[in-house]
Length: 241
Length: 107
Image (cartoon, rainbow over all chains, first blue to last red; front, side, top):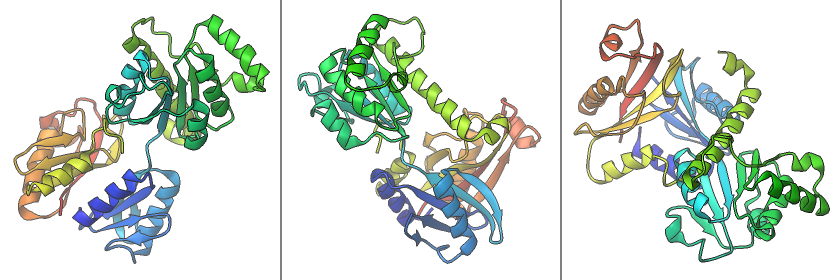
């Protein structure tokens, strides 16, 4: 790999720009395929560029046989995001584990005592009101949203934005009782039963754990389970393979 | 970028900045139950230090050896590991899967 290729790759990843690296196996020659351009020694190789464009769409890394020989196509698609509302004790366990699992994590908590950078090193911490922060972050199909504050005035506005978005996962901490009360409040605020049903609550897989770390594991496990199930649905062919 | 996730390409850059020789190994093809998916990477410096993985630890030793050769001669190579492969049998891909790994010098 050329150093210029490496640096361009890193810059694109830092900016959350999708990019595909196409490499000719025979000699290691490369081209980077962006949405709007191709850069590198193979930029004028039609087969390499076509393979790269296809991977930019599919997000799939694979070896392909082409008129230009064997090519390895590697898709660098920006990681999924996790938005955690509530910089609470459980969040302190959840955030680093989610980051290790490949999520780009953002923590939202307007209570500055909770949302200090020192409690969440290396992670984006926003101290805006959850609905304002969420409106700005715009949850998309590659985003999971988890609310952990227990406080309706923080959780509810975040949930309303999440339920009106395409977030692939929405979870909210709280007992069955709390969740029933939440439903009444959100219904009142215009959230339909079908929308409310998207919320995983009580949040997380039932692993039987009680400590903040154990609850964080159950939440992350559920998010990974949902993500994998959705990916399998999108690509039934691969699942069978 | 996600700071907690292992940034293999970032490690490659740091090693290069420190004046080290570096090779990069990438899983390009898998069959059956392979431990790491296509695109998984392992960076190796001239002293044999590793960041990342291309298997569950089964073939890393053999990949590092090839990586050091690639650093010396500058030529990329495509390695096959699997249960039918003598060498892989030696290094033990216990999962029964097969993987192809592309190894190249960086820079």
